[in-house]
Image (tube, rainbow, N blue to C red):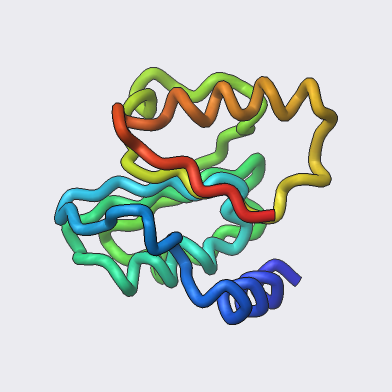
Length: 131
């Protein structure tokens, strides 16, 4: 289901990363929140230089792709977006992408999640939310 949503949404929108978001840095760092199968992250990895770092976060690793299929610049980590992220992740991402998670929480929980996600961003970083 997640992969089908990804393919449908990408076809309709016509992009993986919004065209107004600059992605020209060869050292771009991207976080995918609620990554699930990692399909969005893996597609983005194909379109960026191998010097970019991409990390998928999800509450469980059950849908992560097999480790041996991960490109060298892609990693997956277990993390609940409603809880604070580790200090090592704070302020390190140029882009934080969130997709298909709107039904997962109450309004109060979303406020907390957004605050947590904002902490991941470098100054001038972007939050892309598609739901």
